[in-house]
Image (cartoon, rainbow, N blue to C red; front, top):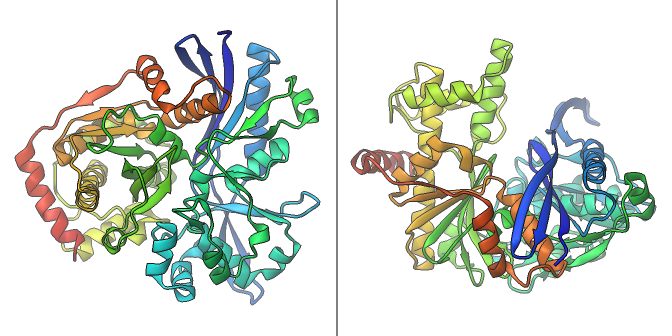
Length: 502
């Protein structure tokens, strides 16, 4: 087979990366071609009543420009022929587009505080148990059901002007090629899709006041949904190129790249800004027990991701941001990796998913407030603060693992940690210690790998994901962490669970 080249755009909540996947005869390799930083930007603006409010937006123009820069870098390195483009993104947000192609204002960031109370408003429209039975999604502030209801009740004029609503990955496909479809993995996390039918739920849309005509077509991952605009392709120096729907929710792509042998015995953690902790199951589980555990059913690649959204390294990222403001310089990761293991273990715990850690003005202050309120010892230095966060994350993973095993009737014999967090050796070791089973870490760029493998299926290069597994294992080293110090971690878990359940 002549070598095929696919282009993966991987957009996270703090940066974007563009990769090239090279597919030959039973061979695969991947190369990063472009990387850029981006983040939600906060404005302080007065509303119609004169109240000053904080509003957080994405710079979609900057993100699009950097996708184009990635395509230009590809052309300079490898020429005009490209066999496919796929985009995955963080799992929330989107915007309305008019029939003339105009985006109606700025693109809100999911951490914007307008959504703080919207879960309750959705629950007031339809019984929570019914919402979960339909969508399989738990209630999270960032759910697009919340975002759509906010628009319908606060700015109905936008819906009157709009021709279509485009979830965030669809928005960038639209910029590249005028495509308006969204794949089922992303639609599944909006809390508006029927989990069992893979279609927009008319009952949910009616309850939210959303015209079905505004919603895009849902397609399976691996579907060719269009081509790069001819003028854009010419500007980049590229020949006509297919746009292929992938697992556009980044967690779907990351889970697809986990080198799992037995889905019933493998816990998967997509580790990054968020920690998505779950297992692959055949069909959605929407029982009252699953709902009470805060577990969500998200569309996978021929399966369902049964998982819980846990706070991830966002807490650490925010600590480093606050300390940079205080110090005038950013703490290097080498220092984080030195002062954290040197700190005394198990001095205090936090619940990483406490709402106060979602988007505070000062993360360290929020942590110290939680510790004070729960009558624990105040951390004496930054290393102790960091160790508390990492230990608490690992203990929360154990708690979620026990919930999933109880609901699914499975056991866990190995934890696969994929994504950027798989490079965090300390957190990997803490996770092995906490859960009590080996951790296999990698691939680091699992989201891009999964993106490329699903593209390869859509492009006819691979028949299915099973055929992708040998390619992934041969291309990326997997590091194993074995559990240690079981007695101390079991004692810590006992204290942690009592604290969390209060």
